[in-house]
Each structure stands twice: as C-alpha cells, then as structure tokens.
Amino acid sequence: MKTLSDTWSWLTTATHWSGPDGIWNRLGEHLYLTVVCLLISCLIALPVALVLGHLGKGGALAVNISNIGRAVPTFAVLVLLLLTPVGTYGQWSTIIALVLFAVPPLLTNAYVGMREVDRDVVRAARGMGMSGRQMLWNVELPLALPLILTGVRIAAVQLVATATLAALAGGGGLGRIITAGFNLASTPQVVAGAVLVAVFALLVESLFEAGQRIAPSRGREAA
Amino acid sequence: MTPRPRWNGRVTAPPDDCLARNEWICGAYLSSRREILWDAALQHLQLTALAVVIGLALAVPLALAARRLRWAAGPVLGLTTILYTIPSLAMFSLLLPVYGLSAALVVTGLVLYSLTLLVRNILAGLRAVPEETRQAARGMGYGPVRLLLAVELPLALPAAMAGLRIATVSAVSLVTVGAIVGYGGLGNLIYSGMNTYFKAQVLTASVLCVVIAVAADVLLLGAQRLLTPWTRRGGQ
Image (cartoon, rainbow over all chains, first blue to last red; front, side, top):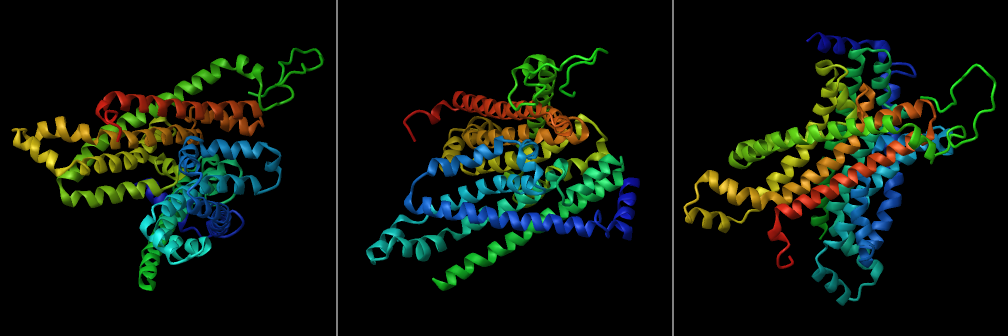
C-alpha cells in the first residue's frame, strides 16, 4: 500500500511533469516515435502486401515474416543497431528497430486480407471488364480493409511496446521514466512510469479498436 | 567484462586478435567466454521453461472455465487481452513492488503474457470440437470427465499446441527484457555488452536467443506430430 501512495505522490508532483525529463516531454517523444514509425511502416508494408496479395505471389514470405519477427528479441535488435554505425545518428537506430518490428504484422494481415477476398467477387469484377488496378482499388482493398486495419492496430501496439524498450538502449519516450527510476533505485518512479506506459498502450489499443469498428460499417454503407 | 588483455604491470603490445579489434564475429570470444555463455543460456532456458509450464497449468483450467461457464468467457478473454497489451518493460516494472529484483518477477511477467496466447488457443480448440462428435461420445455412455479427457482435449490439441509454440517463442524473446532486473538470461549479456560496446558479446548472445527460440519451436512441432498422429493420416 505504501508503494501505491508513493507512486501517487510521484505522479502528482508538478515538477515531474515539466522539463526535458518531465512526463509531458517523454509522452510527446513516445507519441512522435509511434506515429512517425507507424506511417513509415505502413508506407513500406502496405503497398508490398497489396501488390503481392493482388498477384497472389510471395505468400510464404508474407505469412512467415511474422513468425520470424517473433523469434528475434526486440531488445537484441535495438542494441545491435545501436552498436552499428547507424547508432551514431541520434534516433535513427531506434526508428529503424521500431519499423522492423511493425512491418511484419502489417504485411501478414494485409496479405491474408487480400487473399481472403471471395474469389467469386474477384472473378465477377474481372467479368465486368475491370482492369487489374480497378480491381485492386475498388474491389479487393475495400473488402480486405478489416484485416488491414487489424494489422495496423497490432503494429501500433507493438510500436508503443518497442518504443518503451528503446529507453533501455538510450532512446527517448516514456520508458525513460522507468529506466531512470531503476538507476535511482526509486520504486515509486519505476511504478509510475510503468502505469503511464500501460495506460498509453491501452489507450492506443482502444483508439484503434474504435476506429476499426467505424471503418468497415462505412464500407458496407457504400456498397 | 571489457575485451582487453589482462594488465600484468609491463607495457606490452596488445594482442591483435578479434577481441582487441572489437569485431562482431569472434571465435576467441566463444572459446574464452564459454562458461559465461553457458550460464546465461541455462538461465534463459530455466526462466522460459518455468514460465511456460506455469502458464500452461493456469491456462487449461481458465480455458475450461471459460468454455463451461458462459459468463466467464468475456472477462477471461478481456483480462488476458489487457495484460497482453501492456509493454514488457512496464509489466516487469509493475511487478517490482511485489517481487523486488528477483527471478520470480521475470517468470511472473512471462506467465501473464503466455496466458493470453494459451487461453485463446485452447478455447478456440475446444470450441472447434464438432457437436456431433460430442453427442456421439455421450451416446456411447461417456461421462463429462471422460468426454473431456478422451474426446475434447485431444481434439483441441492441435490448436492448443499452436498457441504453446507461439507462447514459447515469445517467452524466449521476452526473457531478454528481464536484464533490467538482472535476470534476463542471454539478455544480461546483451545489456552489459551494450554498456561496454562489446560487439561480439551482443551478437553472440542475440544469435543464441534466436537459436533457442527456433529449437524450442521445432521441438514442440515434433511433440505435436507425435501427440496427434491422426492429423497426419489422409492429408487434410
């Protein structure tokens, strides 16, 4: 119980919220890392997955890349990149590591979504004289959207988690509050940082879940 | 831990080997640090195995409860999903006041993660047992316990094993984060290697992590084949 009240008083101390090490700044860094890396990952993974899914090629790679991503420890990749020449360019090693772990779920889900589109619908579209591009944009993409969005949600949650770990390898973000707490041997600060990270992750998850609930219904209305 | 020759009081030229040059791949590292690597790998295996076994022991009853009691399914799945969303560093940190800097902290964190994957997959496997199969077993005079042990659980095994494989591979990878409290198996070597810029140590420990994950996955796949011979018969 003492830890709880200590954590509460740590969180409610005004000085812990301001300044370069403050919660607001760390939250901003975390949000920035998550959003930028999500955009980069989507720009890399989605075009590849959509084209591969449309052509029906490279399925083994698109599906297995998730399994490979799971076997490689995030922490190891963060440290490995930090020790390469990339690590000397500020945040780049963190950004690359984050993107590496966000791409697999995006790729796998978008590919599977494209392949699970009813083949009869695709054949009907071709019979109506649609070109490959029209089929991709007007038929397959809208029907694959729910699974694509699932991939985006998983990637976003993964990014929040990886960005937290990046603090161990010298990166910014809310994880820094936790690692600083460990260095100071301050359990209240460690727990306070963990609570902030957990709340942030759950907020991101529920935000994307809500977005997913809205998106497919709009697709159905248009159809 | 620094990859430097031992100081013996005399000024000698440092040996020009891969340790001195701090190369990524270094045979001398492997031969001189064999014991450290072995101890770290052993701790890695122990933490993973303990977490997965405890996770399995908790997940089976939870999945059965969620299957039997309709009202329990929602809360059980919801709670495990929330646990899975919490980032690993935060999860270990939240457990700090309870366990302190101990191996139990790491094991508990890993158990909480594996629960999600295991409960989901076991429940999916149980739900996929065809109602006709269940009725046939009941018609043959199977009681509820025998139905569960001899019909439902074996048929749920492929889905459960898939969950077990994912949970194990994830646990192997997540153990490394335990380095923050000093119980991270090979993660400890990665962490100290990072602080001393010791490239060979970081790369060797990372590769060993992946090797352990792949080996565990292949072993479990083999076990699954042995336990479910019927899935191999007659193709699909």
